[in-house]
Image 1 (cartoon, one colour):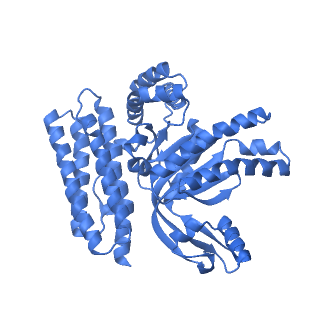
Image 2 (cartoon, rainbow, N blue to C red):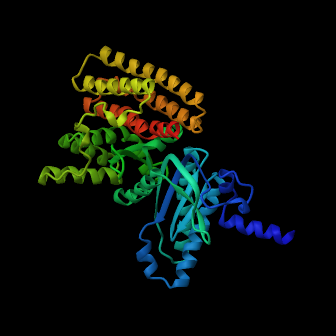
Amino acid sequence: MRDIRKLISSYDRFVPHKLLDLLNKKDITEIKLGDQVEQMLTILFTDIRGFTTLSEELTPQENFNFINSYLSQMEPIISVNDGIIDKYIGDAIMAIFPESPDSALACSLQMLKQLQHYNEGRARAGYQQIDIGIGLNTGLAMIGTVGGYNRMDGTVISDSVNLCARIESLTKVYGLKLMIGESTYHSLSDEYKKYARFIDRVLVKGKYKPQSIYEVFAGDKESVRKGKLKTKGKFEEALAHFHYKNIETARILLTTCLAANKEDLPARIYLERCENYLENGTYEGSSELSDRITWGDRFILNHDIIDSQHQELVDASIKLIEYIENEKESFEINGLIREIEESARIHFMTEEEILDSTDYPLFDYHKMQHEAFLASFSSIIEELNNPSLSKTFRMFKAQIFLLDWLVNHTLKEDRNYRKYLDT
């Protein structure tokens, strides 16, 4: 019996019991090739900056000692925040968080704090300090087993994983520690959103529309964190102008941000992009915002009620952007905003009744997405209604908080429901 307990304990180190729970298995002996389950996850990717260069200066034994020393600092933090380590890829970690995006973000911030303590120890021992980047993304994913008869492994498959890896890689471009996807941002509590700001739009393979990505600066040193919080509105307005190609206005706003916070690296990077554009016409950003979305076949699910309500919301969102652009009266804009908010509530309630009546297994996640949208939309209504803010900034907010969400939700989450009905 003692040997059996030791064996089970050893297996748990390779196949976490939390992963078995997700697959509805009691122990590893029940696992079969092809076992799978689909659910909402927040995915975390992280790796060490410049690890290849660092490792070339170490012996093989020193490399393994270093990697294991670092990973042993991070593994307990992931576990205590209800995360599951999916795999180690050299110095990189991929982990999943089935509970909530807040758990994944709390874990990320604790990892960055632990890295500071780890670097203090490395400095005392005369070793080079290290930096890491962390990317988070939330979405539906398949958890299951892949491989062959003699060797199989647990893994996570989803386009959410691909986007998460891309987000993590972009932390290097912007010199940031922590970045998240728009689906994670919309799902966060207000406590964490306070320290998040829009950073870019990226087009990922297989996606129709670029995805917005955000920086979370809660883990920055105090002076930088305070500076970014103070200039958050001005910085996001600058990026709105940049993405609408109002480059001179963006340049002026970014210069103001840097005057208040010289260590704001993304502001410096965007300022350089503005200057490059003004000097040689090279534009380093997504250009699709000037191309207005129209309702079309790509959005149709062949469900009359849902399709009709989707079209109503998309058309009203486009109309809102046009109202702001054409500087309609405040009462007209406010009336349309309230109409969209009420239409969304009715649509979501109707859609949830339809999903529930068909025993859709991902009903809870789908409903949570609706609730997150309503909360995010409510949080920007005051800005959309504020004529003292530039129309470009307000159009941008309507685009990334309203229209982008509707398009991505329809093309991903609602289409997933259509697949369920077709099976």
